Image (cartoon, rainbow, N blue to C red; front, side, top):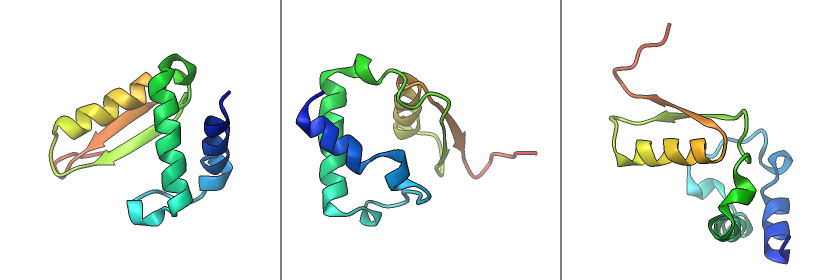
Length: 94
């Protein structure tokens, strides 16, 4: 494991981020943003190492309407082992 990846993983560990939800980039500190970028580079370089990184995790996406963004986020979650739920203003959940 590379030094950069270990540092990014430490800054972005689940314990570090919980219980906060990320709603805006403004919620992140400069070191957290740098760690996210380092981790993204590591993931792009070795995607198979992260195949199950989000195993059994879910992301709910709230968008005005479906777009390329919703498809990209859903594909990313699936690639990392998680699942995504899209909710728009017309969605109804019972």
